[in-house]
Every structure is written in C-alpha cells, then in structure tokens.
Amino acid sequence: MKSGLIAVIGRANAGKSTLVNVLVGEKVSIVSPKPQTTRNRILGVLNTENSQLVFADTPGLYKNSTRLTEKMIQTAEDAAKDVDFILYVHDGHAGVTDDDCELMKKYVCGKTPSAVAYTKIDIMPKENIASDVKFMFERGVTCDIFPVSARKGTNVKKLLAFLTSAMPEGERIIADDIVSDKSEKFMIAEIMREKILLKFDKEVPHGTGILVNVFTRRDDGVYEINLDIVCEKQNHKAILIGKGGRALKEASSFARADMEKFLGAKVFLTVFVRVEEDWRNKPALIKEMVNI
Image (cartoon, rainbow, N blue to C red):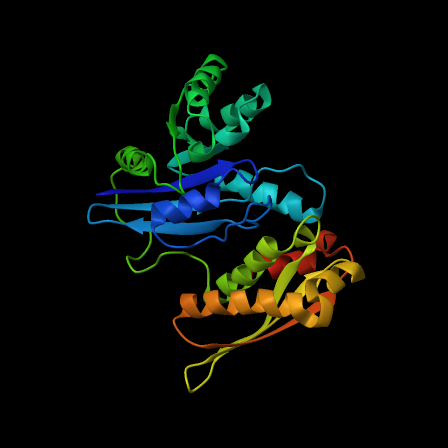
C-alpha cells in the first residue's frame, strides 16, 4: 500500500488549514481569514483501503516579531524535514511575486518530492492562472502546480490522486481510527480561539491565547470545561468581554456549539478573560498554550 507523511507549507493565510481539512474530510485545523491562525503542527490523517496520507498542517511563514512567531516559524521549518513529500500552498488570489517564487524554491526545489497547490481560484480571474503558472516556471519553480479551490472542491481529487501516487510503498504510519494527533483538550482550545479570530478584528485576535483549566466528563456524560482567554492589554479585555458581557457570551455560545459537535456530547462551558502583558514573549505561557 501507499503510505507517507506530507508537510503542508506556505505563507500565512494561504489556505493550508482549509485545504488539509478538505483533503482529510474532517476538521483537524481551525480556519479563519486572519494570518497566524495555526500556531502548531497538526497532523491530519486520510485513510483509504490502499493508502494512508498523513498531512502535517504547519503555521504560516510569517515575519518574525515575537517569541511566539519565532516558535511558529521554527515549527514550520522542522515539519519540512524528514517527510516523504512537501506540498507548498500559495494563495493564487494574491498573485505571485519574485519573492514568492524564491520562498517556494526553498522548499520545492530540494531532494524531497514536492508540488505547489495554487489555491483560492474560485475568487480570482481565471485568466490569471495560466500567466501565474508560467511566471513561476520561468523563475525556477519547476515542480507540478495544481490550481485548486478547497471551498469549491475544484481539482482537489486530482491533487489527492497525485499525492497518493507520489507516496512510497509501506505500512500505515498511524492507526486506522485516528484522524488527528491532537488531543480533545487541544482541539477545544483551538475551537475557542477560532471563534475569537472570526468575531474580532485587527490586533485583538493575535494577542490572545487559550488556557484550558478544567476538561472533565461528568458521570452524566456532560463535559465540564473551564478556560481562560488570555490577552495582552486591558482594553483588549474590555473588547473581548463587550458591553454587559455580550461579546464574550456570543463567542462562547458559538464555541460551545462546535465543542458539542466535536465531542458528541453536551458541554458546560465557563470562560474568563485575563490579562498577561506581553505573553507572546514568555516561553512558559507560549508552551502551555501552544502545546496543550
């Protein structure tokens, strides 16, 4: 059978997590239109009768400004090592520059088999696709390039067939019944963070992290979850809570609904907001939040 590990690499907000979720057929990574959504390497597993593809969804390549982004970039760099394939994801809607091509070549022109997923073609002029592919090829990006739309499913099956054919022969890497390597506790924190990313704009989401204080299942089957939303400034705390606590209640309600869907059980959720100034430069807090 075919079996292998695929590193999914690319700039922040290129659509990596959305594509991995579609390829795997399950939600293994949170998704938002903001960069820095993925902060850790998350494995998503696709099992078929004759193959197993293990996708390593990585943090976006992003300008380094804090210890957190430094850790995220290092996570992406490490994920590209010792894998069977590198899938570089590029936001086609944003166009292609010389800098983009140079970054691609860092990952797709080595000894590891590779391809480029040129994403978001459903929201861009179709005539730009051929010219962008030609531009990449002329600048040395000579691997296979797949224009895809994860939202619409365009060319996803074609990409999946190519990835499967590129895998080496071997046994399954991970047990058949596992879809992701992350714990339920990790995914609960990610669901809460996703709702914050979707609800709030500008600088607030990037300065927030989630600490899960209690994650237990009671005898009646209900999950009791207590978590802190950690932000960096008092005015961010006020924004997250909102007038009369309305914003926090709304985000928590949306999160609880997704948690119940994910866990397949009722959830009793308690959420607090606390301030930890400059937490993104504090290694202990970063480790606690990123490696739940």
